[in-house]
Amino acid sequence: MTATCPECGRVFDLTDAPDSDEWAHGHDCEAPITVYSKAQAVEDGEQVAVPGHILRALNVSAPMYVTSALYFGHVETTGDPVMTDVRLNLLVRAASVAFRAGDTSDMMRTNIAFDGVTVWGIIDGDGCTLLLPEDY
Image 1 (cartoon, one colour):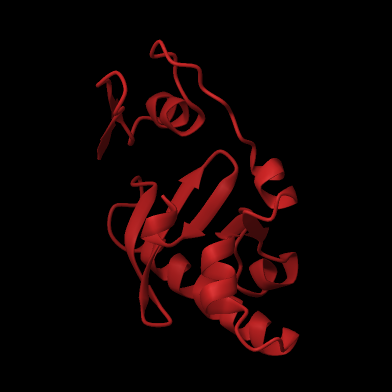
Image 2: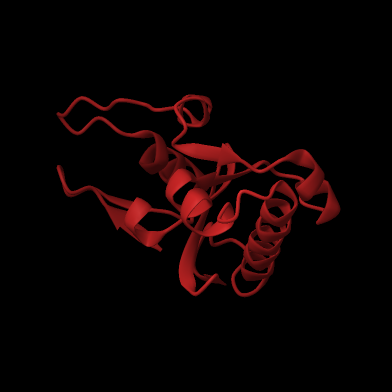
């Protein structure tokens, strides 16, 4: 899988760890790149960290995050914390199944079905982020 920088046209091999990392964190293509850390995204409310008890219950060892649009639009829909945990558990379970299927070296999935929408998952050095395609 590859990605092309829209500014400079450089092609990145996303199956190659250094290329994938550079794509995820920016590269020098004559334009200034601002790095926005996972911690900043969580602090700013752009992403929600999946609680440890859900990850442990599903035997997931890497940190997982959900974009706020996915979380508030499709996970936390009732205001009931128990139901939110159940829905978050179902989302993480669907993502885990998708990442275990197919090419396990591929760090992106665009076929995770949840709550009537397609969810994408991206694994990087910070863990796994689940997002709606329009969040990409």
